[in-house]
Length: 423
Ligand code: HAX
Image 1 (cartoon, rainbow, N blue to C red):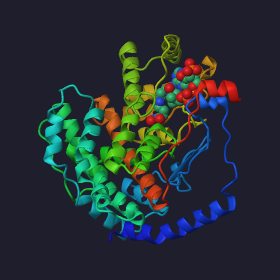
Image 2: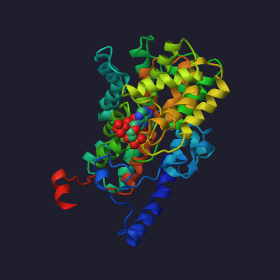
Image 3: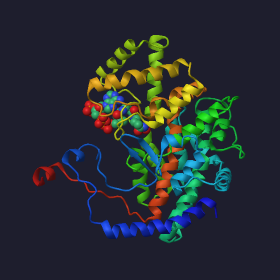
Image 4: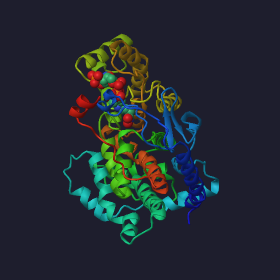
């Protein structure tokens, strides 16, 4: 048994007991009330379910298992996965064991590439990525064991087995799609001696003599791993998994939500916006010119991508971590300079505009400029990178939901007629 699974096996019974007692003691207490306007506005702010992998506070941002994000930006993606699942950072031994497990499942089956080859040449990389995941559904251990009558107590283990196999393949799938979709030549085989991010960089074929692109991808895959349970992608995958659809179904469902421009696709939209600024001004504009440019966009009824958030009310710490990286590694780059200038301009503009509840940058405001610098210029690929990372959070949440026996998601909707007659 893997050391990760062993750790979870030790932890799960105590958490099950804790929650049983909590329900016994506080099961009838209220944690939220719902107003009519919340019912018409995306259920914003309603506390209605539990996610322990991470939480997001309006003024501090992402906290992973009690650790504020900016305290742990140095850890590797494999470590954050272990942390999301167990609440502990792995020992050296546990980390080696997890890396070995990932390394033995790197190969994406040939039939997946054949399915992807059959798609139109201009298919969006996110469509290719999600199709690739769904095409592998027949590999699901959960589904095979379920068909044979697996007892409920074993669900979480089968979800974890699927999750690790799927996660191991995602950098291979993503990098293969990058090369296929943007005519970069034949796929590059994974290297089982490399870590998750290093393997991705290797399989893209992009140069990285100094190792800084590898460092960026480690940070990138770490920062995007989870953002509590209520965001579109996490909630979609949570809902699909609650029907006992296996992780291949549930992760691809979540990622279809991530592919929306108000969610994960904002990273591609944001770099597109930054490049438009660069083209318009042939470089870095003045502060006044950029302010006017932003106002024009707002007056045309368009959002400023990379700014605003449904929960956060402060600059996103993930943005701050990317800006720190940029200051250290690519300080004098002009595209990065525009991102930096936007940070000085947009919050003021959005405050004056008066609509957005949060005028501050989110995770998507800075990441694209860094990827662009390292040669990953095809910005409609960026949400695939977000997806590779966010799958860790979805899978961690799923493992615990099955371990705790959380039932099928089924909130109750009401009709407008009901509201008129009953409130
Ligand atoms: N630019 C212009 N207007 C904005 C805005 C922005 N960046 N952010 C919010 N607003 C507007 C909204 O469109 C809304 O306008 P209407 O009343 O006309 O509909 C109003 O301000 C109130 O919105 P809100 O309550 O502040 O924000 P929501 O919770 O409804 O939406 C969004 C949150 C992130 C979707 C929103 O801020 C947005 O569209 N931002 C730009 C896109 C973006 O960066 N998305 C990525 C978010 C992070 C993420 O999930 N990454 O994956």
